[in-house]
Image (cartoon, rainbow, N blue to C red):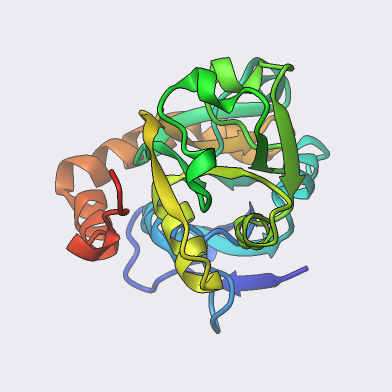
Length: 247
């Protein structure tokens, strides 16, 4: 398990450095949102969070685990914060979905064989669908027990399962799916059927003392949005080459 501590920036004025508190963040490797392979954690969600942490006067500590384990760590109070999970009733019992801090992403279906192209929701019936273990995508899909869902801990694993014909299609958020396809060398195609994304939240464990700072978090998030910081960070991760094929 990766554990990286990033110190508070010296120029932060949200809270004096000597009063800084630790914010332990549970993260799974899912570039370009959360990239944990370099010397320090990076990625769009992490960059946005670090901008918030600076305003809040938090010292960020990142702990890496597969997504399923990250959720359990938050439920048990082992981490304070998660970055970007979708809101569900089950998760809301142990997580507080504080602010829609992160951009929404369309959900895409990746495939290799023309026989597995998805043009409408009904085309998913009978197909082996690769999903991230314990991930939530959209309500109809999440609650559909008739679908054949094959879980894996990482999207790269799912792309390799697609290549080895262990699944027929893989569902993934747009940027993550495109990145996983490229990084694994699996030349996956993108199905015409896609689902618009929903809000992705900054989430706090209900056992964390940071939940008492909710009002200050709301204010800091509003300041980040009004100042254009989030839009500037998003622009760094979106280039013309990010558009998937066969849209």
